[in-house]
Image 1 (cartoon, one colour):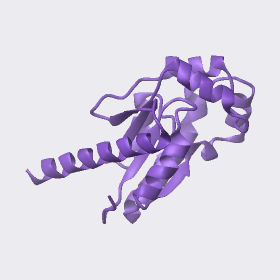
Image 2 (tube, helix red, strand yellow):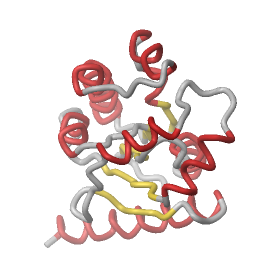
Image 3 (spheres, rainbow, N blue to C red):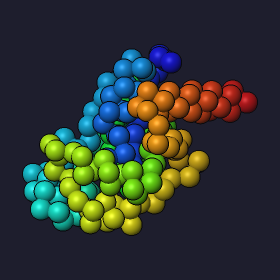
Image 4 (cartoon, rainbow, N blue to C red):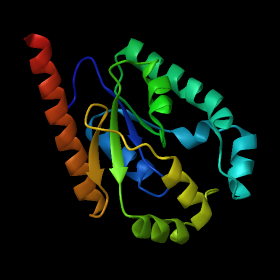
Length: 181
């Protein structure tokens, strides 16, 4: 599905939904680059999350602004870039779109039980605990079809990537058809 102008895609959802793994595989499939948004959190935010404290809007502001800049740079370069970023609130997604108004989101959704099971099985991640998951689920403003393609994560990684790629292909074809009208 490689295109000349490239696409910028944010793979979004709460912790342990698979943003990194799905994002990496989707980027490879699209012949693009993957960037893990978690790598751009400040040290203070990582420390806060490591203590089990949820981030607030002030904690996220600089992080989202930096990711928006990166997306804008990729857009200017015509690069296909897939970013893993929770993007829990619509205003966070709006901030990210400032760098690229054509930004597409892939929302990875799953049941609380599945997400908790995945969180509890993680060993090398700063995000731990049921309270943190519940905080993210409470904060989440699930995107509508106007903002994102939604993919259920209750399947194999390969199936989730395939569903995401198919949904993106359909969305881009629809956008191209609308632009030609």
